[in-house]
Image 1 (cartoon, helix red, strand yellow):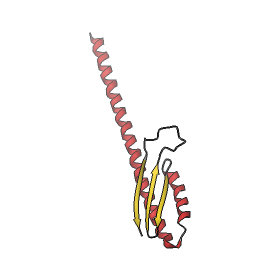
Image 2 (cartoon, one colour):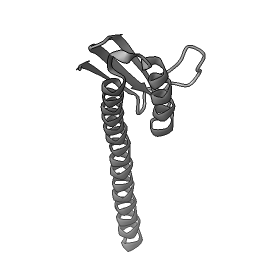
Image 3 (cartoon, helix red, strand yellow):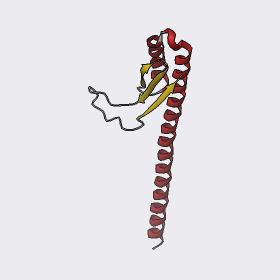
Image 4 (tube, helix red, strand yellow):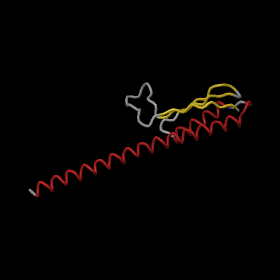
Length: 119
């Protein structure tokens, strides 16, 4: 009878360890999501400053190209667009989105931020 009790206690112990492991994985996924959202916010602020810098003088397209290079570096598959004319812009930044030729499902850690900027 005592071997059976030991077996049950090991089973309960292993299930509790699996539960702790699942909580840790969930927390890690949420941390990655929060990181991506914060980096997207910072990158949109970065683009707003760039738009203020170039203002009506032009050069917006060159700044968008440089900005998208930074987006690729700090966000997984980060791609941004800037629409509008001086002084009103709409800045969109998406990350980890599934493309038409991509076979893998990329719902995990994917998102978009849209910000209207008035200079």
